[in-house]
Length: 417
Image (cartoon, rainbow, N blue to C red):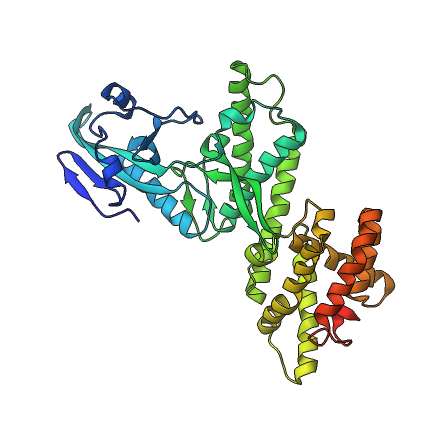
């Protein structure tokens, strides 16, 4: 999945896109990367994580790149791995291309005589990401428990996304990741900046149809072991004086990883049944079982559509209609009436799921389906700050009633019973 061979010159082969060629053609590819500064190349002063290879950052013709020197075969393999992972929608560095340099024949004396082998160096070129924190800087500011857990959550989410798609890291550590301030679209709400972990080293990545629990946990265990090495380095250099990964952190990481992986499987099962993409349309699940609650809700809507039309309605069609006529309008009401401001840590969709869960357990407790409005009112009185909640509740309930009046929400609809 490399760019086509753009140019072959002397001992060099350039696999670079044409649009990047003018910015990269003048670099001294015939020399080792660590000697480029002696050739007048000015590098960007960006601190990178620990690496087995020489990595440098450069800005040329308003384009910013990271260049990593390795073997030719490793450069080809890593660039291809990045391209494949990005096709799968996974967060990785963006590969630009590679430059291969023929270093000639290397002779070595062996019991069988003198053996020669052709040597080839490779330069992997990637886009330089903005708004990232290399691992060396993560520990310089207040690395309190809540801050550590935000970082752990970002790393856990990366593991979950990789493992759910059969990707085994093999050398998982913070040194092989970037913690990125990402601006994500929150369904029905807009944008929010969150911490996201980016895979920044794909040398040891393995792609499989699926991963066994043992293989998945091997990645997790290796990462936790690598944190012990990181802590030793940081302590020796005087950057930190307190533990970086405590016993409680390790327990939190393992438990949170398993919970998030289970949720990922739940989301995938929900998507297969309904054809609704949870992350892009509903917002992420927070608690185990939310998929079942939503599926029950869609089944109720399916029953209602069948009653109204007098015919059989497929689950997929019911899910699409539920999303279009129920979920999105209700979330829009939550947003327009300021309900999400009462719960700043939630998205509109997460709040919807929480209220649906409240409706489910409230109905179980009372032995009947209480409907959305009663559940919303009970939830607001129970959870929302009393003063602001009282001022907002009436407007929200009125908006919901008007939204369903004359449409799919007549008096027989399960949501309004």
